[in-house]
Image (tube, rainbow, N blue to C red):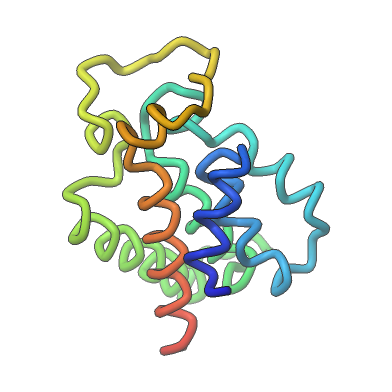
Length: 148
């Protein structure tokens, strides 16, 4: 199963967008799956359903940080290199979707949404592009990893 397929399956099983992307790469990360899921739990729905940066994008960024990030009070080239990587990931996602902002991707006209998630039904999956977006984020990150 590809990481794209794994991320999509994780989303379908009930994980939020950020969790789905991070957990699709869990075998490469030095943090256990429960801790990864908890760490990413705040970022679904565009950060707690605030509809800001898409959770799939946030999960992609978190994973990139765990794989390639820096761990000190960095102010120089290493930080710039990592930020360039993050900007490239955002650019690739935006090229495919038109945005990295949750509410724009969902066609919503409000910033903040109810904190209560919608039930995951057949209709939910038909009207939301989230499953495809987590797959795209995982695919973009995996492609970047192959070129690094």
